[in-house]
Amino acid sequence: MKIGPKSGLALALAAAVGGSFLTPRLDAYFLNILIDVGVNIILAVSLNLINGYAGQFSLGHAGFMAVGAYTAAGLSTLVSANLLARFHGFEHSCWAFGCFLLALLAGGLLAALTGFLVGAPSLRLKGDYLAIVTLGFGEIIRVLLQNFESLGGARGLSGIPPWATFGWVYGWVAIVIFTVLALVHSTSGRGFLAVRDDEIAAQAVGINTTQYKVSAFVIGAFFAGIAGGLYAHSKQFISPEGFGFMKSVEIVVMVILGGMGNTAGVILAAVVLTLLPEVLRPVAAYRMILYSLLLIVMMLTCPRGLFTALGERAKGWLARPKNGGPP
Amino acid sequence: MIVAESPILALEQCTVRFGGLTAVSELDLQIGGHELLGLIGPNGAGKTTVFNLITGVYPPAAGRVRFRGHPIHGLPPHAIAARGIARTFQNIRLFKSLSVFDNVRAAFHPPLFQGMASAWWRGREFYAEDARVSAQVREVLGLFELDKLAGTLAGELSYGDQRRLEIVRALATRPQLLLLDEPAAGMNPAEKARLMKWIQFIKDKHQTAVLLVDHDMQVIMGICERIVVLDYGVKIAEGTPAEVRRHPRVIEAYLGEDHVGD
Ligand SMILES: Nc1ncnc2c1ncn2[C@@H]1O[C@H](COP(=O)(O)OP(=O)(O)OP(=O)(O)O)[C@@H](O)[C@H]1O
Ligand SMILES: [Mg+2]
Image (tube, rainbow over all chains, first blue to last red):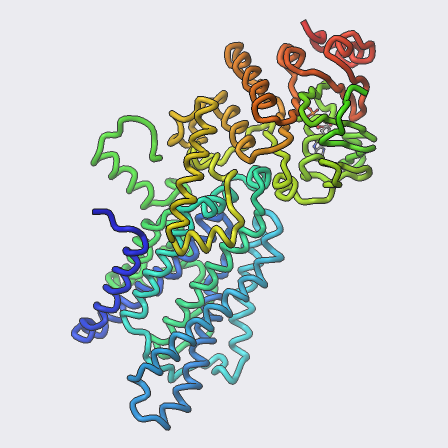
């Protein structure tokens, strides 16, 4: 039996919520890592829509994550500080559920709006402007937050309610994967790839390339904002330092390692790169050096992504190809 | 003027400059609604620049472009394409990492937001639309004998097939005017013969006006009803193939190159 994409999404959401009931039995440390993995999957899969499928090099994903994180955390700390005192049992009521959903969506939407404001002017320009603009944007957000005392300034914002459970995080993982795949596997979504391959040819068949690029950018920023909100409500503490340039680079490395425009590979890369520092504790300190080396080696040896290359080889081993490449 | 019916496209005194270089100079050009017009001239004469001018890649420094009576100069390329002008490129531009099928499918893209909403929701109408587009893509591919290659990546096609795919992709936008920039370049005689047959077919069956640029005089003289000759961005001659071939300024412009025709 073949499962349609919508049933697939429903199943995945059910599994995420079901999994939530099992997680209290898990070791807290392990659960934490699972949630980190989920947040990074959301970040990497959404950046892949921008960098991989639409071919626009963004270096500001952590900036959008920060917008979402601070918006959602600001709203939920405000609400819970006021309501928690008055209503007994607020935390476990469906009100908390609704508040969290609204806070997350507010964070996602504000990140998307920010994405539009940053992307609309710079995506008209060609080439590497976007990389530079987004890099600058990420730094501006970080510095602004450092000086924003009502959100904790450089000390960070603490006392965020611990609402981001396994079910929440993996529910959103399911939604972002579904969204990206559903878009890309459609006639209009192929337009993202067309724009990436050749902008002038895309325009010549009537594709409004700016509109496509901005859309990919805004959708990617939305999910980065959601990931930020989830991150804030699992760590219960956020500070501007957590959303710096290095975080953006980390997400870019996941996309490049997984293979631009290869969602399965990017998910795998997010999992591996999140677990690696945990497994190899002594290496963790040299993480950024490792990433940089990885980037250089990758670009030289398999620019289409390690996991894309490995996947193709595995396919070749499994089924001796008749002829030609994949459809 | 040979154009009896009102022209589908009219360039009026169009000039395009690149810095100090005037690539197209005060050009007047008209194409009839069902005409197959040839545009020739030596290397660097400004033929590709005329295509880029018509399709909005470069706006004219002076002059006007009218399509079906409406001015289109200053519109962005995608808007001009949407109005019914399609083109191919001298240096082939395909979506290399996409399949032959998807290259043509790109021409059937719906309005973005509507398309994305429908793709996300995946209702019955999405699958119906998807099936409709697939059928249309297969149909055009079939007309040009590319259906067997539907799954192949465009970047892996042979040179001749790439040229053919570019024409098919342009045709899939259902243009009223098709601009072909050196479609015969790099083709062998058999492929050229087929190309000429196809261009005739496009013009007759699809009721499309065609503006054809090529250096291959056999192709140009063989199928064009009327020919315009450019040299240094200036129109130096215009007329039937027989008239153009005898025109003294054409012979002069082509002196040193192969002689025109036969
Ligand atoms: N983008 C550009 N910037 C500067 N100069 C250009 C540009 N495009 C074309 N030119 C110049 O304009 C002139 C006309 O070029 P164009 O490509 O239109 O010629 P063409 O008739 O298509 O020649 P060919 O037969 O070689 O294709 C040439 O001198 C060329 O160098
Ligand atoms: Mg040319």
